Image (cartoon, rainbow, N blue to C red; front, side, top):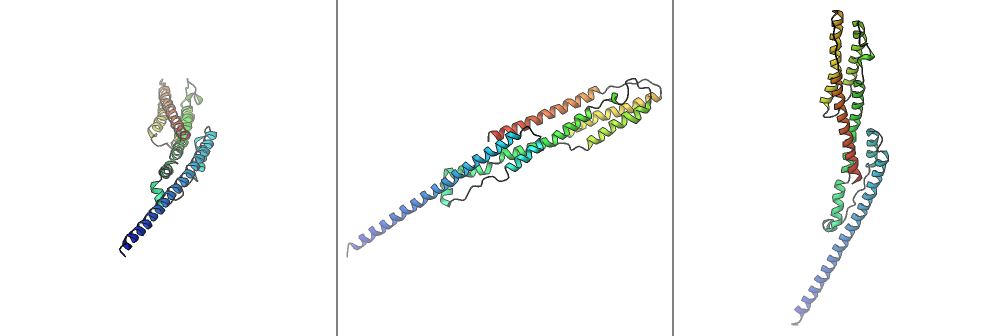
Length: 242
């Protein structure tokens, strides 16, 4: 009878020990399960990234708008990290890595998409600005014009029309000053042409040059085009390194 408590204690200790072993085994299995889920996800992400990068690389010479559509289609359905047992999620370093990857996997692609959206607007703006700045007064009047009629009926309307059409073009974010510079160069010709017509009517000599205004605007447009090209190249490189 005296030995009974000892036997009972030994039995309880044995049961507790067995439970601890079972619990440890379950925890190990949960971590292993989380590891496996995370590894599958990371492999899927690697394939996903490679596929999108391949599509982007094949189309990187297309215009920004078309390339952006390719990017958006490519990232529409990214891999999703499957759930794992609670203990496994909390103690698997691989699963933690997968969670971090899931939070950032689209960042370089969404950044590229935003850059391409800006570039798409910018390309149209640049083309329109260069079209306006390609205008030449000598396309409408001669250098020794002696009648104000052509100045008023041809030169001024042509430059006014070009100015107004350019005003309808969407201005990229942060480029209003550049737009004003281009419009200002065209307006300068309109204003000087009006003075020219008045001087001709008054039989007074008058001449003007707009080379400085147009060249300054053209240089500013070229600088913006270079900046835009650099932004796109940087975003493309970031995708390639993702």
